Length: 282
Image (cartoon, rainbow, N blue to C red; front, side):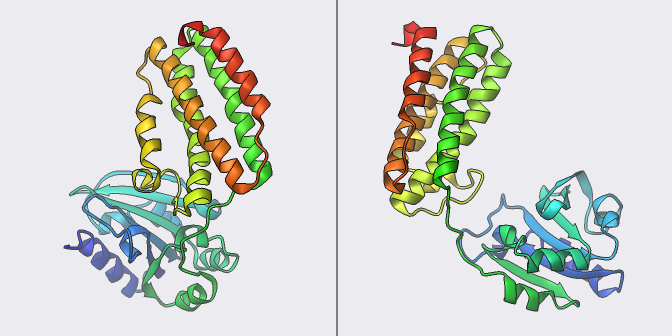
């Protein structure tokens, strides 16, 4: 497949070779992986080590890579900042920018493993970053782990907020209820689905729901169709019950697989309240 980002990388490397304070360029993400590789919808993630990060994060240096259409900055690993840019041609580029000293620290203290352990490619290096990466970053699929204490807390948090969301529905606060059901509770459901798939099937569960439809059980994916709601009271009630049912099944199976205790009383009490609030669902 043609490299859609070839010109942007060519322009970036020209800047690096021009002696303007850019000391390392590292590609991470799908463009640097040998598996689950990039496609026509992929972005390119680039880690830069430079003497003046602000010129890349807030200045006009990215304009030299292509025609910037949309751009903003947001927090990233190690307390740093990345600039996310949509160039002409729908070219999506994430620039994670550090000073050479800060990037070296993040590699040596293993913080950089968070974004590099699935694969990286050094595109430019005049500071010895390649050796640091070789010594400190192991390219591997990271194992998913949640402790028994975190598991218990997650389950109790979920059941508490099912009741909280139900009360919001009853009060007519549909916006808040929907945010809880379709975002907050779903993040907990995702974590438990990750636990379930890793513990029972040794699946690579990625992060933040990436490739969920590939690694999650087909029955789980099918069940999700009933777990999201339109901005409608009756649909929110149905989605809340469906989310609770799916969470309970996956959490109990995951707990058994990991040898964790399951807070069954929390589920029992929460569901008794939901059934009392919405007797039409019984």
